Structure formats: C-alpha cells, structure tokens
Amino acid sequence: MLPRLKPRCFYDLVIEVAIVRPGPIQGGMVHPYLKARTHPDQVVYPSEALKAALVRTLGIPIFQEQVMQIAMIAADFTPGEADDLRRSMAAWKRKGGVHKFHDRLVSQMVRNGYDEVFAENIFKQIEGFGEYGFPESHAASFALLTYVSCWLKWHEPACFLTAMLNSQPMGFYGPSQLVQDAQRHGVVVLPVDVQHSDWDCTLEEIDSACAVELWGSDPNSGQRYSQSSRRVTDLGSDPDSGATLKHVPSQQRTVRLGLRMVSGLCLEVAQRISQARVQTAFTSTEDLALRAALDAGDLKALASADALQSLSGHRRQQVWDASALHRAPLLLREAAVNEVPLQLPGAPEGEEVRFDYAALGLTLRSHPALMLRNQLQKMKLLTSAELHRLPHGRLVRACGLVTMRQSPGTAKGVTFVTLEDETGTVNVIVWKALKERQRSELLHSRLMAVHGTWQRDESSGGQVCHVVAGFLRDLTPLLGDLTTQSREFH
Image 1 (cartoon, rainbow, N blue to C red):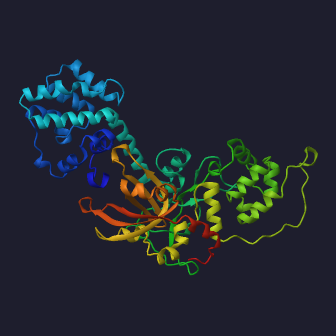
Image 2 (image 1 turned 180 degrees about the vertical axis):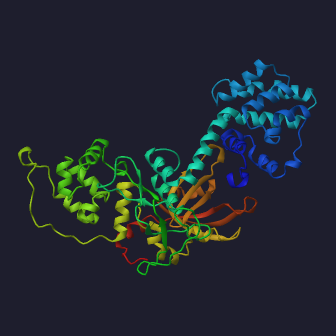
C-alpha cells in the first residue's frame, strides 16, 4: 500500500492507517481510492452535497464519520439515527449489525435522486465497516504513532532498534527480523556479553576515531552504506573473508544486546550480574559464578547464548567451563579451584549459528542462507537482491527462512509468506488451491524454496514485488547441514 500511496503529508498517513483494514478492503475501497489518488482530476462525486463529505478522501468513504454524513445528507437520517448506524458499525459482527439499515438507506437515497447501483455500493461499503472500520480520530492517533516511529527509525535507527527489542514480544516482526533490517540500514549490533550487557538492550559509543566493521549491502541496489549518513562508502575488501569493509565514524552509537535475549535467564539473575561487575570486571567464568551467585542452570543459559566469550572464549569452551562449575557448599563458596583448564577446539560457524537461534532467537553471524548459498545456487535458487533486479513476469526460484505466514480473513483463502535470506526479504503469495495441495510444505517449512512467477507493479515505481507461488519445497533438512559447514564458506 505504501509504495502505491506515496504519502506526502500527515493526512495521507491517516488514510493509510484506516484503509488497510478488513472493513475497507471488503467494502472495495482500496483500489478505487488508489485510482482516484493517481487521477484526482477524474474523480466524479454523486452530488455537490455529498462532495462535502467525501472530498477529503477523493470520493471514497473511508471513515465512520463519513458514513454518518452520507446517511444524513443522502438518506435523510436524523443525527440520532446516524449515531445508531455508527454504533452498529462499531459492533463488528455482534448483534445490532448494519443489515437492518439496508432498506431505509437504499430506498431513501433512490427517492432523493441517487442511482440505485450507487446506493447499493454505498451500503456494501457500510457493511464492510461492520467487519472492522476506523473513526477518523482513531486513525489520526495511530498515524501520529506511525509518523514518530518512522522519524525515529530514519534519524535514530540504533535507538529505535533498542526500544523495539526491549518491547518484545510485539507486532509482526521478531528480534531476528528487526536486527537483520537494522544491520542492512547501518546499525552495528554487538552480542550479549556478561561484561557489558544489562537486562535490557542498551546503546554504546564507539570511542576510537575510526573503526572498521564487516558490512552488508542494500538488497535492491547492492550498494554499501556508511554507518552515519547512508552514503556509499567502500574501503575495499578483507583479504581473508572477501567481505566489504566500512568506516564507522567516532562516537557512533551501537546496540548492545541485553541479557533479556538469553533464553532461560531471568531478570533477577541479570540484575545480580550487573551489580556484581560495578566495582570491577569479571576475571573468569568462575569469578562470575562466585560473585553473582549463579547456579549451573544460569551458567548453561549464558554459555549457550555465547555470553561468556570475553571470559572463556568460544562457545564450546564456555559450555565446558560452565558445566565444570557446581555451586559449592556454603563453607567453600569463597575458595578458588586451581586446576589446568582443558582447551577445546572451536565449532564450525554453522554450529554456532544454530546455537544462536536456539539460545537467542537470532544470530549476528552469517545468515543461514548465505552459508548454504553454494547448494542453493546449484538448485538455481535466487537471492532477494537478484529477484529485485528482474522484470515483471519472469519465472523464478527463490529460497529463504520463513519469517511470517498470514491468512487474513479478507484474503479469500490466500496465504502470504515472507522469506528472508542474506540480502533481504521476498514476499510470496500462495493461492488457496496450492495451499490445499501443499499444506504440509506451507505450514511446516522453516527453510522454504518457492517456484513461481515474479510480479512487479510498475505503478509503484517497481517497489511492490512478490512471487506468485506455483510450487513449494521444504528445504528445512538443509539447516541440519550447517553443522558441517567450514569456516571457509566465504
């Protein structure tokens, strides 16, 4: 909706909030409004009297207040009767629906000279409001939140991400999708670390005059952006990994993941960790366990989340060190244990990624699709970035982690799926017939491949893109292969 609407003022956001609701969609208001928005000079109002009620929404009734105005202007409803109509719309399928107003509204509009087809269409739209429609004031309140959120996300992306992560669970997007998007927009995200992390995610400053970090690319253009200004900045490539480097200006704020992200760790334990390190940093995992009074379960949770890296090294070593520590009897709790530590080899990155998702719900390492890219390429499965460069109508194959499945009641059996890979997201439309044929693949795939037709709406500047699925394939077993992936997958 947004790429088609192209909001230019605050009131556009008010309309956008109100129109993408089951009521207006079912009432057939969305496409007529977009058409009127594109060609405002072609809007025809049924009468000058109704123009006063509909001019602000280009002839399309979008708000409950407009329906009340139409009833009063075109069907001679009294203010009290119009308010009864509003109440019936607000009932949303409960008793007292709008159907009882049909005869009175349509017959009176026809008697007042309005075309019967127009009158029936108006009532159909009113019925849509009975499913779910917004009053204008309600939409304006939401639009204000929308405007503020967009401003923060653009001008203070690190603050925005931090607040969103600290507000979980909420909304359509989980922590993994929020972090992936933030990283693509220039936010540096630092891992959970018992030496630095509080319970909530926090902001940190980069003190050095210049820092070099690995950097991704914009999924549509492939360009590399500087951390502070989003202008293209390319410092060459890392000779070991081949990844592009970026320059991070001084005093750039980064996001430090909080202990709240660690599965199985409670607030009380996180607070003990924060309080224990106020005086001095921890010197070892044993020191942490003693000073923060951590039990075996706490240490296991922290090690599984890779939160002990600054104390024990890689994750396998963390798990070993944590499992070796048992809470001593009261009289021996202050006594140190001196023994030669066992040094374990590090795990392949694929194993690390799997543990990240299991313990944190996200990873700051390579995206699983990137690690499987060689195998996916052999199957001719394209990335999101590659898809977005293709013209409308091309037969395509894509693959990604399933991050969202939606089957709105107004979609008539259609399911919308979002796939995520290392370059961005792909929106997939699954028609009802395919859903019935491949229900298992649709509902159970964590890594899904889709064969279908690429559709690009040029009226939106090519920004509205999706794959209309013709065949689905469950590639979830490939995720198990990540444990065998070498560190040299780059």
